[in-house]
Amino acid sequence: MSEQKFLWGGSTSAFQFEGGGNEGGKGQSIYDAREAKSGITYSIASDFYHRYREDIALMAEMGFTAFRMSIAWTRIIPDGEGPVNEEGIAFYRSVFSELKNHGIEPVVTLFHWDMPLALVEKYDGWFGEETLRAFERYCHVCFEHFGDLVHYWLTLNENNLGLMIPSMFSSKKRSSQDPDYEVYRWTSYHHTILAHFAAVRACHKMLPGASIGCMMASALAYPLSPDPRDVRAAQVHNETVNWDEIELLTSGRYNAHMLRAMESAGVDLKIAADHVQLMLDPTSKMDFISFSYYYSVCMRDGENKANEDAETIQMMYSAYANPCLEKSSFGWTIDPMGLRIFMNELYDRFGLPVMVVENGLGVKDDVLNEDGTVHDDYRIAYLREHIDAVNKTRFEDGVPVLGYLPWGCIDLYSASGDRTKRYGFVYVDFDGGLSRYRKDSFYWYRDVIASDGENLDGGR
Ligand code: BG6
Image (tube, rainbow, N blue to C red):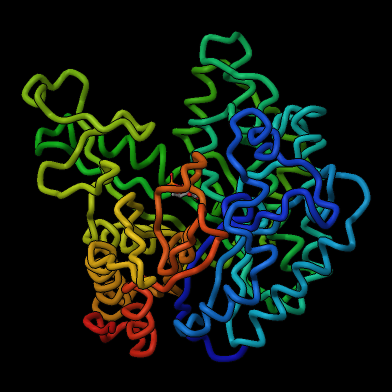
């Protein structure tokens, strides 16, 4: 890749979009196991597996220059650590080639949560060091087989949430009351950090021209009031959720907050010498930071009685709704300025280029009309404001933003499996044979891309 062009496109993940769950030699992931219990048909999802040519043609029609997707580990190595599945390799090579043939750069997440079930059963997910070794090998396989087609790589999706939701990859439900809870969550988290470093180092070694970054969930917090106690509560939140991990990934060292948190939890990680070396190795330092951004939150100090009537919104952060902002129908605050603030702060702190790899408005309101139209003006309004914020960050603030890849560009399953929460420019009729329909936002986004973000008022 020579000159770096801004990446305009969209974003998905394998377990929410790909389908083909029982085909092509794919092994079971934790989502396949969940399907057996919940009936949520992850094995079909939006059926990109069979329709990728049609979907990529739609992306090309919008003018996408990039498309974020993840590789399902279990399609490459069905049990996570055993033989490589050649059919899986052939599938992704075919998808990446199709993208390249349309001038679309694949942006590939190596791990978007769909952990091989076998590794959860055998090693308790990221808790076992064996899983780390299996991941390293899986990354090698990916770099070896796809390196000629993929320039942009992302390591682990939203890894900064790992300490908050440690049960995600556990073979048994963990509770904070369990005696081994703290050791479990810090050990598992530490292994994901090593997984990130190992992936970056291998990528740099095997694919010197490629670019690789982390993927974090942004959870920007403001103080609920100017009361210094609330300001401090927001600061602590931002450090813990947003900045500590990026500091760790950029410096190779746990900072004082993290060390203190471990110490007070009675956890001593005893990091092996070769792991210390890996974390400090200059070749294991990433090239950019990618992130998801949907909303901001407010924090208040628990003792601050002045704010007692404030509206709480949980979002796993025990946060409060910002009284200055509107909310989506899912209760997520709509805060385009927060995106600009977040990117500025991220760049000021770490000095690495940033990439927006998730953003968007998930709603239940999309209506497929009889003539095949979907009038999603609310989505256009949301995206217009956020793209305007990206433009200002790029051109007024001078932050190197590599791309804007909003989430679920073609409708897919939400993380919880809800297929009525839609984000896409393309409507997928989940009850009507999975046919695709262009929403109004499709035409609008096509004009945005054609003008490199200048025309925010186009469309049909
Ligand atoms: C991010 C995840 O947390 O948010 C995606 O990386 C997820 O996998 C997205 O789908 C949107 O959340 P939801 O709950 O609307 O699917």
